[in-house]
Length: 338
Image (cartoon, rainbow, N blue to C red; front, side):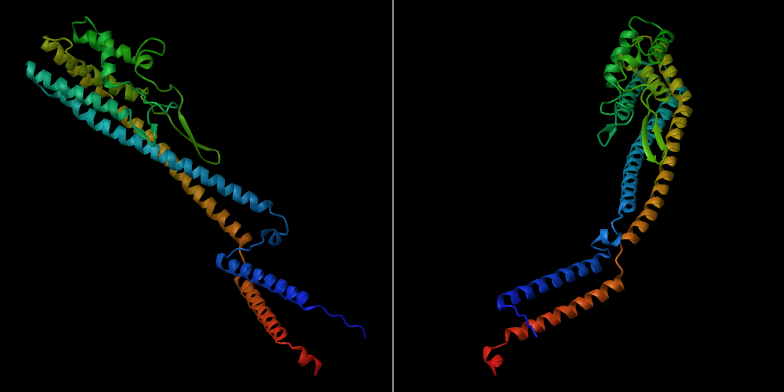
């Protein structure tokens, strides 16, 4: 009978290789037990990983849609906050200018005019507000403020109304300037810096796009600015010395603000609808993500009972290998020759 033997160095190498293999297998099994996922997905899926890739791509897309929805929620809430502040300010100021019977004295007219001027500056500043580096009411041109400063707008209106001596003429000129079509040298050409007729669109779900069309060029905001600017011109000294005409101009501005209150509310309602659509899309996205994540986890999950059994088996093999290694290490030539 032919026998084969290997040398000590070869035997040591074979034992080292076996030990490394078992330790690597044990580390892999331990990792699977801790993470709950198999280490070799290709083997689990027998090389067919297309479905898993599709699931993960879909989950990534839903994550992006959620980021879009989160952005529009922040943006739309910023718009609502601005419009609510403007609505409250113009409602009180408009009623005050329109209904309060103040006397035609220079002091009272000057006080009301200063109030209108301060309010106009505040409103323009609010409309020029930004969230996350994007301006709220500039349309697609969200990297630039929608309006010139309040002072520069009033400078333009002073040029338009120069030489006029009645509140009626001034009011009509201011109204025509704000209502002028693009290219006519009015508000849209000289004071507004955003886009016209182009809503900001956000994709928030499959076939679901939410648009925010409110800009500083929208009719409700233009009417707010028109009413406040009409009254604020008195603070610039327009119709100086004609206290009756100045009071009339203040009241005309108050009338515009009061008449426009419902339009501001309607604009807030349209933004509220966009917020509702966004919230519904986020709910649908959350449900879809949960279902896909569960399906993906089922494909990637490691059986804890099977893994535990494999760990026990590998540990037993390691113990046996260590025992063999110890016995071989204790062999002596004298014992062999006996």
